[in-house]
Image (cartoon, rainbow, N blue to C red; front, top):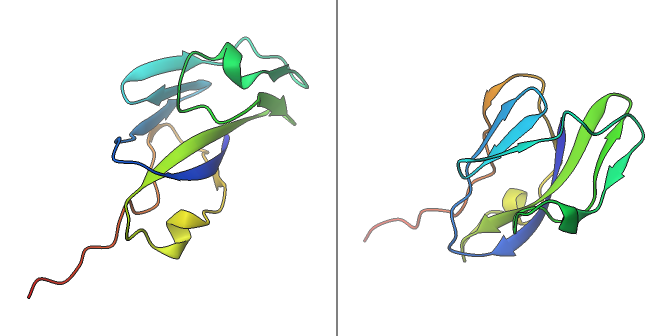
Length: 104
């Protein structure tokens, strides 16, 4: 599974977990097992505000574009994130939401 991100300033939290072809977004499961090789599913066919475009399967891997919320002080790696490849099941580490400001 390959996830690409569309960074967006938002206070909404995002948690992800993967189990095979199932991506869990904030506790809601999305099962893409029925998507065949070479097929594309329009983003609006997936009932989630987090899906940022077409979901496809290429060379056996799901490609899923997601909204990535970030804070006002998010680091550059969050504002311009690289795609992530998920090879293992379990929770997904996301880019940092914000940079903590030092306390006076």
